[in-house]
Length: 300
Ligand code: SAM
Image (cartoon, rainbow, N blue to C red; front, side, top):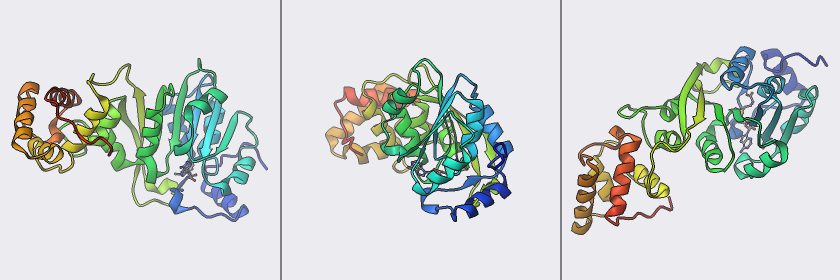
């Protein structure tokens, strides 16, 4: 085998899949990249250099993994599909700085993995062509761990990337934008046509680059409550805040009075829609609701 042939070409991808008698599993979101230029651009957007450690989710047959290994200090990749392990063993054999973990990333103890494989002083980034059926859960899993990630550079459906990076007042802005922008600065690095994947997905994709803010976008009294208020405000997008929050908190007169007081105190017009509020305004509103002793069931 020629060690330095790129995996991500249509021909080599086809050869590898045939050699191992494999076909892509739709249920695991398997769409393999077959364009090395796109991979180079991903590595460039992620600013990976030989001091940087990388976590990858879903190496597939190793297309992105090998490009990362060439640029990075060390790569640890989580792959759930056991059929791909012998493939990766062969395709990634030329590299001695890659560890593939056969694990569902959503069940992985990320802090423990990082402690085992990386020095805490090295920069650490997440780079992945994500399985699209669990894009948001994966990003949230990383955000909610205590892992010190410097950035995330991840491929996802274009529509989801637009939602994550959306500004208030736009159609794409919603609770996902706020959940991510609370912790991270988000920018779409570039978009990717569906033609560079095998099999081809139904939609175009985008690479999003997320960098951690020094501190959350807004300081709130209770984070879980803040996110619950945000979600409640978007339950029916076309409805006003007053309407959505009455549905969430209750329609009794006493509750309505407290809601009115919270709107007044926070200076937010109750006839606005959630999609027009900045994170800072949601923060003011959530804190005012706490001051009125209004609470929600935050289980969902
Ligand atoms: N990195 C490869 C590429 O760019 O060609 C493959 C990307 S493919 C879109 C997504 C990969 O994630 C697949 O290899 C799939 O098996 C893997 N995957 C799906 N769910 C996973 C999970 N819960 N944990 C870890 N890997 C997962």
